[in-house]
Amino acid sequence: MTFLQLVTLAFVQGVTEFLPVSSSAHLILVAKFTAWTDQGLSLDIAAHLGSLIAVCAYFRKDINRLCYSWFPNKRKDIRCGDKRLSICLIVATLPIVLSGLVFHDFIAAELRSVYVIGVMTVLFGAVLWASDTISSKNRLLDSVNWRDAIFIGVIQTLALIPGTSRSGVTISAALLLGFSRESAVRLSFLLGIPTISAAVVYEIVANSFVIGPEQWLTLGTMTVLSAIFAYGGIYYFIRLLDRIGMLPFILYRLILGLLIIIFSVNFTSTHASSLEDQVQNTRVAIFAGGCFWCMEEPFDSVIGVHATTVGYIGGSKANATYKEVSKGYTRHVEAIQVTYDSSEISFAQLLEIYWKNIDPFDSGGQFCDRGQQYASVVYFSNQEEERETNRQLEELQNFRFPNNKIVTAIRPAIKFYPAESYHQNYYLNNPVRYKLYRYQCGRDSRLREVWQKE
View (cartoon, rainbow, N blue to C red):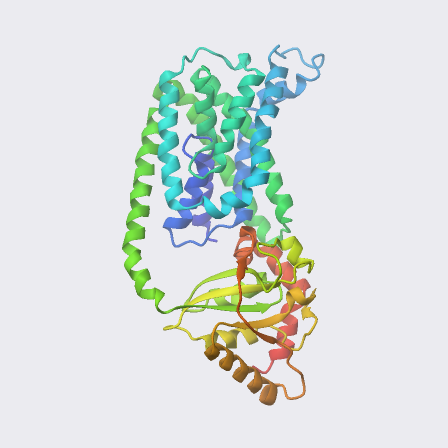
């Protein structure tokens, strides 16, 4: 990733995280509307960590008071409502934490489309306008109570949908409850501290990140830049709030959302005809070669391959989970589905790539992954594919490896179940952990040993 990309992503994350315009939407849009590859989860976490540092730095005095409110004899500047506010922040954080745990994978897989972002941007821009218009704006932050906390906390769960904006929906909710603009904004920002903290911790734990020395500089730079931009965003937003109000942000959301929707609709219609032309040449091939993380990378860079999907095939249970499959409970095999254009690349050429990325002599799995769930298998969809697979296997057996028995199976293709969303493009989203796993598994060294003369 170039320094320009780092600065751009850090600026987008930092400035939009606390403005009512949706940082997640802007980060997704950067990837959608540029030629840059997706920044990956590790950089997303670094950017959010920078935002967290910024809001903690800006509200450091408030945070100190809230913490010391539990020990009233320690500080003289503790106000009577500080402890109640700290409890309310905890209560308001619980709904989004629980919702995130339950719906994380569904949202990542189903709700990150450009069209959804556009609709949510417009919808909650209108909600912000309505809230700001009808609010009495006569309540101060010290008057917050547990009912307010529950209402704002429930509304905050909507921020899990890209395009909604966490700060936008919480500010709207606080305005509806009659809080002044300044109190609504401060409440939203303070609530962002435990919410963002929970999100960062969840992603780190769920993905078991292992950071290599070569990534520390990149991630550190992202964190620092994001913190600087976020601090500036918070400072100027609060400073200018009374002067400009919410109208500029409402108009921005409405205009941006409409442009996104128009682009999404036009893009779909423009490409519909070309997709119809392509569909007659579109084919699907399914290969199993051990850990499916490692099977995507060899095919993704090949001209003619449109998409790769990792998943499960051959088992006894529909929609099995990774935990069940990896332990061999369901008799599924980890596999990759390759969608390709037969006018640009043939099944035979894909098969040649496949052989070079497996150990065809291993009957107990592949590399460090043991068990039938990691077996090497070619799944054919028609007689032509079956004949070509047998031809190549016999050629390898008779001429390339006459002294070693090839045990790769050849089976008819049956129902293929895509794996959970976090497994898709794993080598791109978690490059350090992927490379470390691949090295520790001995995959590359064994492939060189088998195919060294190729």
